[in-house]
Length: 109
Length: 120
Image 1: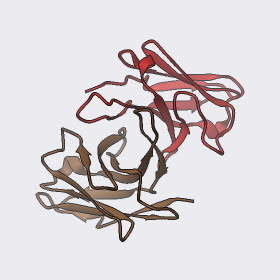
Image 2 (image 1 turned 30 degrees about the vertical axis):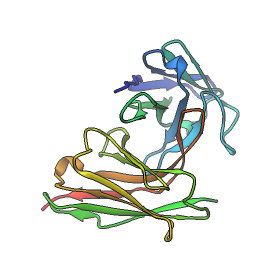
Image 3 (image 1 turned 135 degrees about the horizontal axis):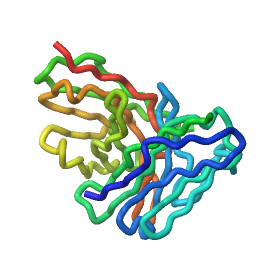
Image 4 (image 1 turned 135 degrees about the vertical axis):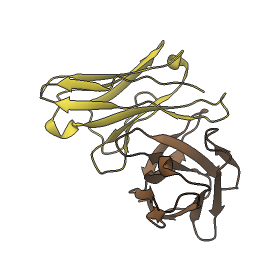
């Protein structure tokens, strides 16, 4: 099955830019979706179709996808952005298409 | 606003069957894929499987022999059965709606999750 690789942790100072990567074989040919999960809460979709934002998600959240790496970028990071972030693809060629990355813990210093 | 709510027993004995129901409100269950996703304590998300409102299903190969997902459109509900559970099945179980087109799906609405503990 398709494998998505994320760094376990990323740290960033408030007001700076955080970049969380998601690696996969030719991931640029797939649509990548991103979720934010705060402790004790359900995941929340923050980016879909590589770079689209659902209603209510700040413009500070953006996404890109090319080659073997997709990236979630959070600009002007705030303390409230501290959370786990998961990437996800739908691998139509697989017998089980729904795949999540292992997750990245974003720490705001 | 679509809302999902999981229901079921929080404690299941080893070797028994875990049964959960997800009730969808604020929208129809028709024309969407509906998923079960779980998260063991301190770990990442694992897609268990999904069902289309018409009844077609897809299961994670690692769980396929033990999983059944069904849908009741008259009640706007879908359900999960996981047989022969062990401690490794202890997790928060989420139901979610899978939306999208162009050959991809993403989960735009989630239930709050329910912790299922497997223990005697």
